[in-house]
Image (cartoon, rainbow, N blue to C red; front, side, top):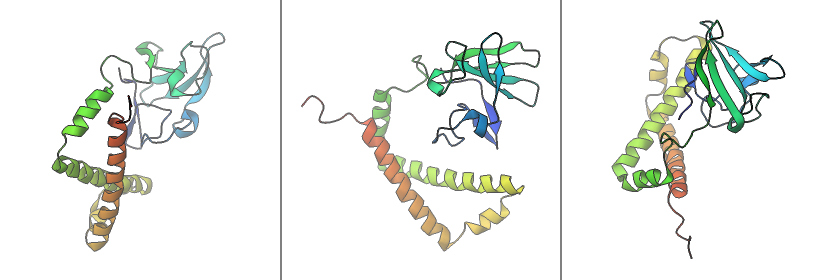
Length: 188
């Protein structure tokens, strides 16, 4: 089961408050997302994030007594403004109920992709990265349109950038493929 308690920061829906909004870096929820420590009754401690509508999120350890140091030990829940549970405590990580893809599923998908499929994935990744970068800057400065970005990223300068980004994403794709495919040396 994927974490169903999410919140939005800078236009990004956050599923795991122990990861950066891009999902690549481990972060402290208190620093990155504004959670703060609370006493959750008795000796129980939790991290809390207040949401705009009066709802709030609590994160505690698996035993419900401590502030977790990592997402592997964390349990997250959502409450309304009257402290009524809207989403009971559950793991932030994935469980084995079928939502998380098995390695064999990833292997099958990667090995069945044509070169055209791979090229389209890379092209989409480059476009998404450019759009996300522009959006991040636009939100930071309060820009509400993409007119300047559209003009700025048109022409020969963009071609070189797209080639560089495509090359890097291809390397990343091949690294993912390498780790998804069974080790050919196993059993030797």
